[in-house]
Image 1: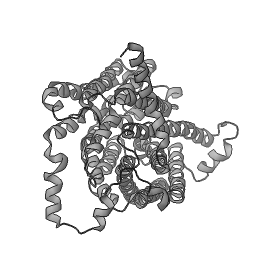
Image 2: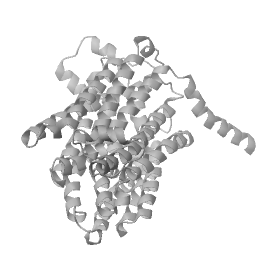
Image 3: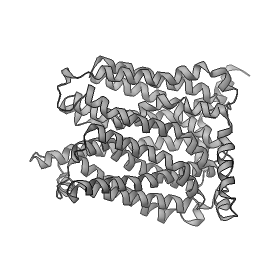
Image 4: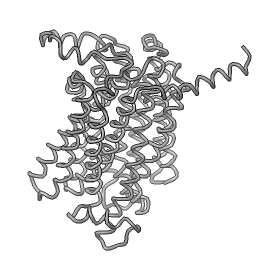
Length: 475
């Protein structure tokens, strides 16, 4: 075959990776829509959660960091049980229930400051985030199960890439909303003018003494409620039934149940738990995942404390624009170009590219280096993130997708759980509130975090011969 013919064939395969998506069932797009819009609300709240708990509720950096860490950890932990169990009720019911729980939890989470102070507010907030965590634990694995059911072997890679890419596009959108609404409410409350046409919206959120952060929380709660109504009306039984690869989780749920002891034994002795290479593979990604946790545990507070007001007021544009924007474009392209490349190889390359730029922040606050960090970190994420999710889901046998997705997220659970237990303390030590940037030692903080993240590509590379023997090269 000539070089020209080979190039044309490669280009045709690249184009077909996108064109094949157009023939997928309508339910595929509804699942993506529900997942993406809810993700907007989730990350809109999560980005400001440490600020909300630390400043608005007065909990302080350490308690706020631990609380946020526990919340994100519970989300992942519940995926192993609640998410897997909910899959048996079918996609329509599970996703609708998840959205309803997330909406209810966000309403009370946003409403808590209006209740006064003290132990009552703390109890309401903790109960609210537990309800939201339950909803998210159902939604995420069930939506990924939906991607498998509404795609085929040819379109699955792009299906997983697309849901990940559009999720990040949604984060860009909520970042734009948050970066406008948060400072606008604060300016309105202080008597400053706001943008033309924005006065009524800002006044609405200010009418009940909401801060800028609380206004964003309310906006995300409203967004979740609208998503629930839209999905319930759009995903009819007829639409949901048009599956390309039906999963038998619902049939298993309705069928006879095995004794609990046997189910537990099969859960821990079969499937992914019996594959040591897979277990090593997913746990070796724990160090690099700590950098992802710092995107909401550390980065928002770092930017708002270490940079001047012009940069601080636009924090969301840095945290929720650069990374998600690159992921939105980069994941589908990277997936189309590398879908036949060994997943393990992509993990080594992608985790290395994500970890190295952390050391750019060691020289102290510098906007150019901060933007460069976000760009390179995001390119690394685009190389491996969606492929990893695809690998875990495609490895799962029928009826056990949520279980495999839950196990694949255990390192993510540990990263989120452990990172928050020291991130608040590290902020108070190296980037304390009320301290001049010149007196901070943020470079030390980022050097430590960079060294931790580098453990992933180094460990993966050192064990590559043994581990790659058990990893598929393509699907």
